Amino acid sequence: MNITRRRWITGSAQLTMAAMMPWSLRADQPEVPAIHLQARESSANWLDAPTPIWDYSQSTLRLQQGVTQRIRVTNHLTEPTTVHWHGLRVSNAMDGVSGLTQTPIEPGATFDYDILSPDAGTFWFHSHHNTIEQLARGLYGALIVSGENEPVFEQDWTLLIDDWRLTQGGQIDPAFKNLHSQSHGGRMGNFLTINHQAGPWQEKAHAGDRVRLRLVNTATNRILQLRASFPGAQLLAKDGQPLTRPEPVPDLLILGPGERMDLGWLARDSGQLLEVSGSNSLVVAQLAVEPKQGPRTPLYPNAMTLPLNPMPAVSTGSDRRVPLLLEGGAMGRLGTAQYQGKALGFRELIAKGQAWALSGQAGMPEVPLFKARRGETIELALDNSTAFPHTLHWHGHHVWADGRWQDSLTITRGQKKTVQLVAYNPGKWLIHCHMIDHQATGMMTWFEVV
Ligand code: C2O
Ligand code: CU
Image 1 (cartoon, rainbow, N blue to C red):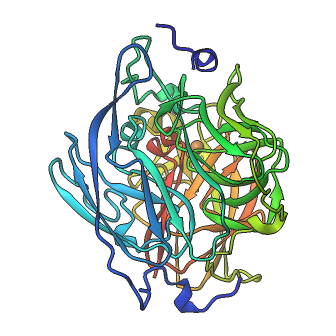
Image 2: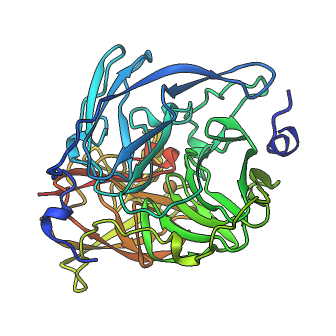
């Protein structure tokens, strides 16, 4: 079986404190039945022979903004696991970070997550325990939170785009930990899926339909480079947070691991979404537009603007500036870093499986990068001194970066950027590179809000 990337293409604003509190219950909380979610062993039919994968019993979870939803997770795997609700501003105890916010769910055990999202938008959920393997084996799904005043879309499509590394025999490559790739761009795949299915993904719309396209990069390490040929499409939201004003979709959409983008498209002519980060471009999605009988939908371009979520106000004169230096990796200049309380040189770090550091610390430090009071605005001075791009992810908070709210941010090599973090959600929260190979080999820290 010849599995190469080639094969895919041929083969197949201002807010009160109360509104800032994500855990504040809505007075009219309706009775919502619990969702049962199983983490399990499964199999995919991508090639001639089945590919064993791990997945969840539901590929998409739908929540209502401001309504607490109990999600009862049962672990049917043979190893412990947790579930993290990526981008949701949940209360700390529900964040699903093994070792920081909870002990992992043992095989056969169940854990109840009570999830209350203050935001409507596009999110995803995934394992946050032994992530390097569990995410690469397929433990993730879509998390769609609907709001009450969202505009109507005739079509609403979610695309979880993944990059799997398969062996010639069509099995998931079991070599999850390879220090060489970990100290470079990370384990790259050779097989593209959309929503756990082999690509390309195909759908039909009628001319005049308003289409919402929710793009999620669920890959462990690959930064997707997407070329969208949907004339007139607009960028509506990033990481679940609507833009103040929709923007034209750029020619090339750069979507790092964990990042999301919502596009709004008034369907006229058939369109295509290509992935061009590899040596061959791949068709991710093929969207056919068919003529519509009867009256045309009136075309109001602004009709797709999404209502803003209740985000905190960013104070202009920030209270504090905290440097966040990205260091290490191959061709980097990392001298020494603290690891488990000891200062180690690069070679010693490598011997301990560490290749990256954040502000002088490799791996999970004992003390947080910073401690903030609720309501404080922290200015984070990002400085990527490495020879690689990274996608930083903040838990429990979005940062204000490049004029938008983002929970995941791709920073190119050598880039410096200042972002604002309004601390408001109490607890201990991770900051890490969402290239899981980098996270697993040192690029991880945390902050605390008190
Ligand atoms: Cu998408 Cu720390 O997670
Ligand atoms: Cu990284």
